[in-house]
Image (cartoon, rainbow, N blue to C red; front, side):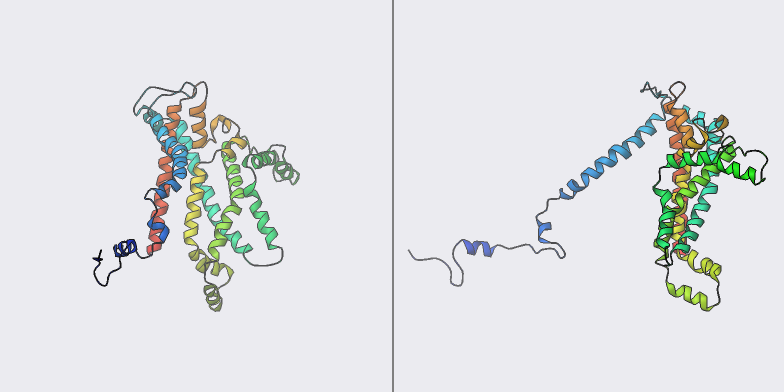
Length: 326
């Protein structure tokens, strides 16, 4: 039988495959990406999403829902009470005392944690003999347990501790200073502990930021006759201002959430009559007391603390955007 194939064409299966039109490959897309299913990226992120949902989203939503109930810490359940917990919160003097202590804590700790680590980073950035030893020594408190460090400081500030003993032998004071029995002094001692433990952590942030400050600016300042302090104010501080804002935000949030330092130094009551308790400390007392605790009321305080922290973050973000625009 004569072939009916037209001249100039190739017969057979190969011809059919060659004759098919292929859609052009998108530019910048690898061959593997052409055969990847649309749901493949979802498989990779699914474990992280599940963990965040279980340990982040669900506890947050549950706390908000719980704040509208009168649930007990051990009984569970609870009845819906509407905004009753929030009305009680606004008229609770213990809540306002804890709020005042938290913001006082932050007002003292944040400026110190913004400035002192920067000064420390400037001092240890030069490559001189044994500088690595000093860097390690400054960072050592960061990796130490807060409870262990708190117990050491508790012994230091005790009435018969080393600090009072030295002060009395030097005749600086005639009687022991009540570091751990006065609410204000407990707060100040806790602030000192927080600052001492956070110096090395924030020093690392500043050391990374100082590496991006152009050396030419320091050289130009030296030529203009600027001393070390002047160079620090006109070159270093403007060069790391965004890092300072980040450190201020992180230390501010951490100060509003402080609990362990107050518990170790002030005891389970938060100082005499609870005078040194902060918001997290008051949440623990209000929500988890097995006899008089109210988990719903504690959840309402937690929501209030979350809103305060959110306002602080928004203010910091606004300040950061204004500085970037300027």
